[in-house]
Image (tube, rainbow, N blue to C red; front, side, top):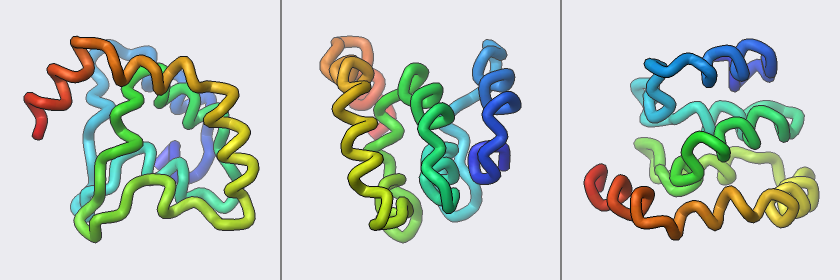
Length: 107
């Protein structure tokens, strides 16, 4: 809910807790990243915090088969493009062996 509503401070606090499962999803299969992208305003800080913790969430589909950015508004695509290019190092983490192993295990 904090991601969907854009409550940065609450998201930041929750992500600092070691026992918080960032891969939790609702009954529609939407993750915290889906909820952050659903917000009417680009939640750049929240998405960055999520990317730091688990960039693989970009590729998780909900029950309808939609990935998080498919919920982003089209008028914000340039903002998101710039954001992703600026934060490419987080996506590079997807190439690390531990992330690849985690993705293979969760499949």
